[in-house]
Figure 1: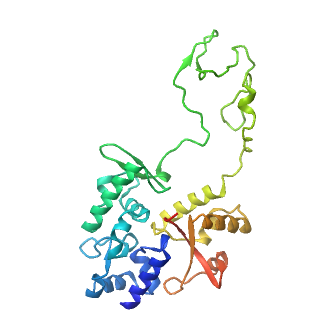
Figure 2: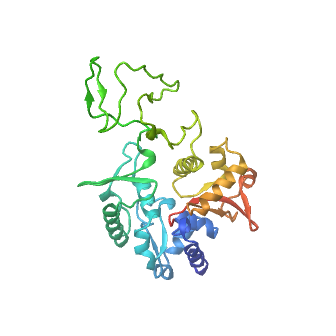
Figure 3: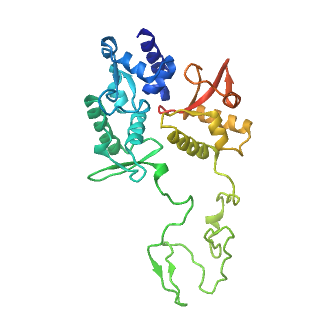
Length: 313
């Protein structure tokens, strides 16, 4: 038991995505199975200091990857954390019902933690403060959802016009904003781009509206590394159970066009921004394959092979 508490306290000192660990992750760190770790946590000594976010017993046992292990004094902090919100939403969502009612999110949590968590959700909505991965619809029954589940307009897509003008040729066109210049009805039509993007006419546009505008990106140019990395991490983490641990090997494979040196430099920038952290494998619960070792990053004598999203940025 002292060893288990020591590991838990060391994860607490690391902070970020390391604490509180899931029951599955704590078992991996101690070299035991989740069942053995769960039994150790049910001892009288452990119950005096440690809480499980969900009851591990009963007829319907929660998956070890959905149970957080925390020290009792951290209950309020964990209730307000992004980590608990993401884990509860991941557990409650369904493929055919990805948006979850606020009232459903605390289900399964210990009563004290559930009440504190629900109060924190209400405060989050009032402050409009959510993790980067989650959105919400307010109202009588607020709904929470992962942004990855939402259908969003493409970047730069034109807004849907709400008013039209009736030019002399009888064609209906969007009304120009107050003070904006419009091309005459007999102006030469613009050529539509070959990639299907809406044509943009520059005829009659004020010079001031073009001066200093950012140059248009090349057709087919890849999205910024950070956006692609975020999307790859979210998808891979969800497929592996939502434990907030993805191997570097899987992420490199998801971005095959990014050279290794570029990948490492961009990932280092994300780490400096406190968006992600890297962890080694202790090799006791999972024997690494050679490909996983080759994909790792060696720092200060440690081979870092796992990526975790930080929640303390």
